[in-house]
Image (cartoon, rainbow, N blue to C red; front, top):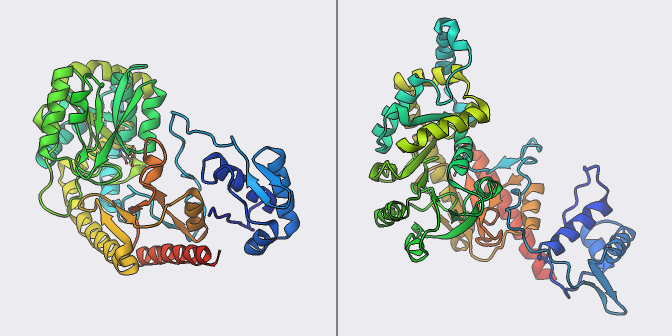
Length: 471
Ligand SMILES: Cc1ncc(COP(=O)(O)O)c(C=O)c1O
């Protein structure tokens, strides 16, 4: 059953809303050729709209070829209207509408607690930087970024992540996203293979595809990707991984697979790109040392301050093997010259004076409480119908439902009920896998909001179950 949700507050007419949802559900295969549609009388009752609207909507879709009427038997989905997914991944579901509703509970992943940004310390340091930075530093700067910040980062990543590098190997970027784009320009040549975890964020797939790489999706199991698949395939190109907390599924790549990856890169002269986006927040056991520490010559390491401080800063960094430094400096220069110098200087002081690690220690306690709350709420609410995983690190976890497939229309219904949540499916290479798993970002939600959001999910799923039973 495909649900149609009507929003009477929208400017779009009811007829248009019904037509566009039916059209989309046929194109994307949710409604299959030959499937009967409910009678206009029945659907009018269900949706509480006039039957004329439905007659007009069915007529329109019949005229467009999506539906066909069979005399005396009703209306059916026509043959040949299913559009296979294009190779280039589609944009994620409604990423920009999520914040439009004022009371929405937003389970978007990767957002830290925005109200706990260390404003006071940051503004003190900003004042100092503005007051004492010499005028010459207000001019154009070098593409690799400020030495003060690169040197503070080199010390920090060694201490916290076991990354081995000198400040010369650190290049400051506008968030990890720009680092990913630079990697695509460095390593993903047109038509050549490039290995990505499957699933991995839709954005990352889009960036590499846009640079002409032939994407080779490698499925993620309970322990991440299995590099022996690469060994069998000869040279499959460079490999992009999130080994400390796979995005989105949350697995941790064990040492055996890390060693295999390094051996593969050495043997085929490719690079491993290690995206270490949120591993500072590890709640069980010790932090997992970086992959880069195993062999700094074959790993490009990417880090970001978006999760440990704020995405609004737009500051990330990459740690490069020596032969890539000059080329990457040039690419950064021709991309945006350099990342804003004054913010870099503030951040450098924040790190050097130990505020970052203090902030991370405090935030870890907050996030652990939120993580425990989400886990408890899901288990109490859905009992054996849900399995939680990927929750030992980071700002999100995976809620896997036993018998619910989170189609676009269910996600839309959840949104209408005041919950923004994304299924893992939108990040899988074929747009279909992992349909029963939701990504639950909890970093920016208070405990009462978490409870309210999970209750809204319960209520929508219960409604859907009831409606299915009465059909
Ligand atoms: C896996 C992964 N890598 C990289 C990023 C990019 O982060 P940013 O560009 O904000 O540093 C994200 C954002 O959420 C992410 O989920």
